[in-house]
Image (cartoon, rainbow, N blue to C red; front, side, top):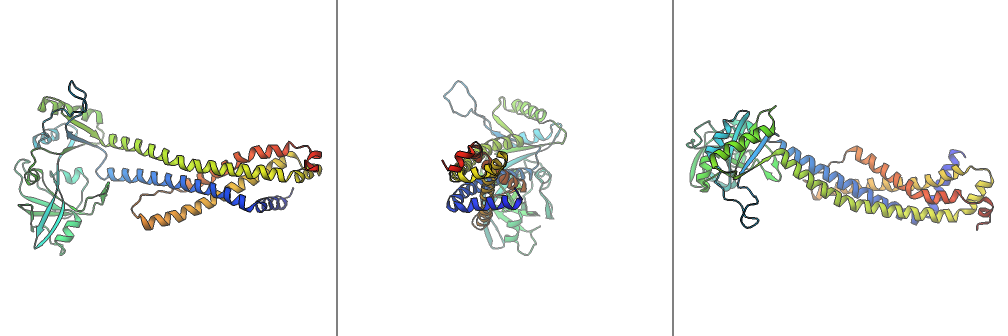
Length: 399
């Protein structure tokens, strides 16, 4: 059979049941588009989270007060704990292998300067935050290396706050008020972007002791321990635990590394991807059932035609190939429609949800087409085998 005859067979077969072919291809298209889109959103979200966490480096262990544990009391009760203090951060900063121990005190408040007022996030920390959190200065300097208990009243502004309060770009050296306290602006940071939806540029940085006084907080919300390259996380964790237990008299704190956070997020994302991917697989199965039905009907309708081909000496494997090719072409047509639908959905999402992370690697698109072809091949096997097992004489009679 020549290539032209083969193409003519396929073209006529697809046109013979246009409505059935279109519905089956549409089922495959919806399945391919949904699976690829959901996979792209899942991968985009994973990359977004990785990028967000990597802004602060990956060698970070967060120490937070309190520890949930099973004890002799009622279930679900938090164990009593001492607050984390600036002295704890200073003690952790002196550990071997630790580059910085950054105190964290966070709140929201109004800042005022030159008659302008705006509400912004206020973060209390230490001078090592510049390198520890990978911040970049564009003007002035960062918080000075003062005694953590009695620091001078300096503030460092995020890019957005600086642009709104000091549109002339003369923030360093100026005075501003945060709450009932006055600070001198030491410097301005370069744009940092967002972290899990939190705008890092809409923020001012104060010495932790001043932030504690501003928000009337005795303890720290967190201590971020940055350890050196080449040091084992388990080793640093053991040192932190030993020092804090010695200072507090009990393990009344929780240690969480960046890797722990990413592992937990990966598990959550995997569950979500499996759940939503199941919806796409159901659509693919519906498309496969449609192709199976079409091929079964086509096989019944073409029994005399198959008998004639056999009588003319056409090998059975060639007839098998014809039916399988028809199923694969139909599925590939659905896959192409699915990719076109995916392109339309991507444009729609760009308009309606511009911030949605979406990663469509070319490999995903090739896998989508390959998956559609495989679905068509599997759905077309049974009807094709029935066609080649026909007796030529019976087939010519159309029985």
